[in-house]
Image (cartoon, rainbow, N blue to C red; front, top):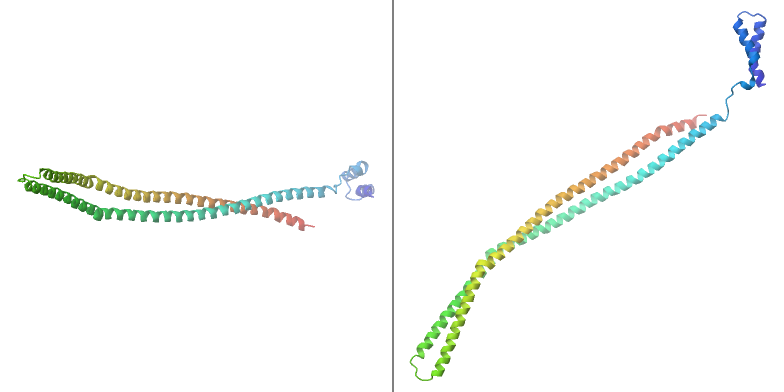
Length: 274
């Protein structure tokens, strides 16, 4: 039946020309003759009914492969974006904690500076003058003690000057007075040395130490300020970097969704086509 359907047009054309119908040309007759003589049903190209399903299957496999790859990429991007958001939150929290710690350290440093400044002022205004006054008073006592010892010895010498008897007792009493005078003089020398040391060395050194403490506290405040500024910049850089990473991953996710929309629309249209 298939061979007859193929040869029917050629047979009809030949029959028409054989009865010399108008409009039949030699080319038509030749074509009909050629068709009848050379046409072979086996040589006619016929579409393979399995070719279209195979092409559709290959296309579907390719689309499914792309979709799987896209799904894996989307999952990775979403996971990375979640991690990036956690890191961003961590960076912000770290910045807040660092700022609080620096503020606490700065408050303590300011309190230490104020305390050191008050100690220095109190030392200059109260402690040092009081110690000098005590030293002067102690020195005056020593001077008075020497003078009293001298006067007492002079009185003893005068009292025993005309004594002709009790020579041994006289020497004992006078020797005791001389020893007391020597001790008083030695004590006065010590008091004079101590007082000079107090005014010229001890008090200036203690004032210098207190001033150095004030300077150290001020330097500590300056150091904390520099560290706070450097830390603030580092934390801000960390926050900006984390924000940039989140934005980058969100953009990649958005681009991935935009890339997937045309293919998804094409796939849906193909499924709807009968």
